[in-house]
Amino acid sequence: MRLIRRILFTMAFTFLAIGLQAQNPPHPNGGSVPGSGTNIPVGGGAPLDGGLIIMLIAGAAYGSKKIISFRKAD
Picture 1: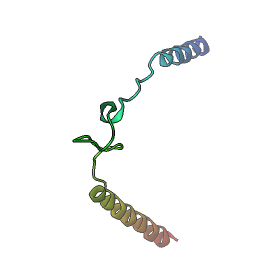
Picture 2 (picture 1 turned 120 degrees about the horizontal axis):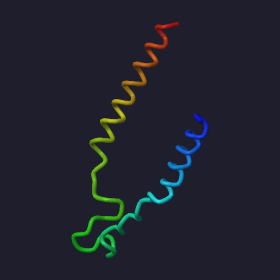
Picture 3 (picture 1 turned 90 degrees about the horizontal axis):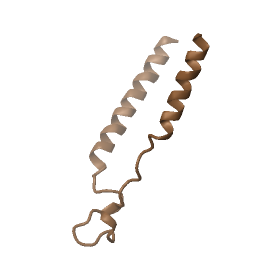
C-alpha cells in the first residue's frame, strides 16, 4: 500500500509539472532597435560595479577566514 501511494504521488507531480511551463520572456526594448532613443540597452541598464565589488570583497574575506580557521584546526 505504501509503495502504491508513493508511485501515485510521484506520477501526479510528474504529470502536473508538464503543464506548468513558464512563458517566453518579452523581447528586450519592446522589439525596437537597441540603443535608439530612450530604450534600455540589451542586457538591461543595471549597474554592476558597486554590488560586484562588495560581493568580491565579501567572498575574499569569507575565503580567507575559512583558510585561517582550517589551518588553526590542524
